[in-house]
Length: 113
Length: 113
Figure 1 (cartoon, rainbow over the protein chains, first blue to last red):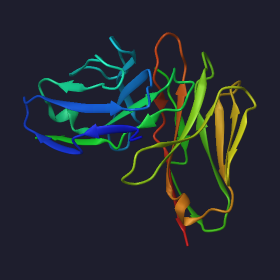
Figure 2: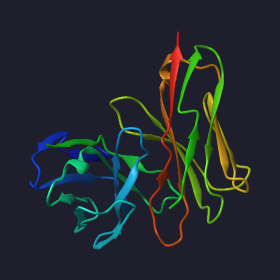
Figure 3: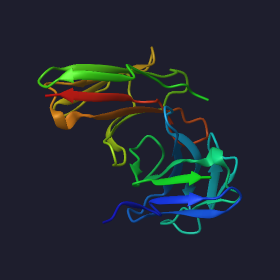
């Protein structure tokens, strides 16, 4: 049982490039989330999903897209990378709504130059 | 948008001493309050999720209380040990049709031998 896995661990992008951050969970959790962590700030919710085929915006969705074609996978897409997207990205999952604990992946550190 | 505030921002405690810190959150539309422990180079791990006013939860030397009427929660660590050094995050869930947590900036705890 690997829990929540994320790839890659680190990535450097040039301005305007695109990439997909991968997130997979093997706990059969319905709910999945993407957060970003900036220095001196709390984790900010980017997007979330309550089940396969259903996604919704969080607090800071601009510049990102998500999809949820399976229960296990919740990739985050950056289409035109900008320096403001330099951050550490965490994927999390929970069995049901946020009245239950969330399980976090190890994070992806992204730098946009 | 909820504002979750944590204090103090950082804390140095002697090994063996007990300590506590605070999380304040808007009390309207409250659903749940989460505490996470985040060690350097790891991902956040859930300590407690509390939903009811007056809730008290305990895990070993760590305990937490919840006051939903006035919008605060305390985390207590009894007899601090070096392995307690971490950032402690609190997060609030307000429901209202949207899911996901609103996090505070964390309290960075350093236990000095």
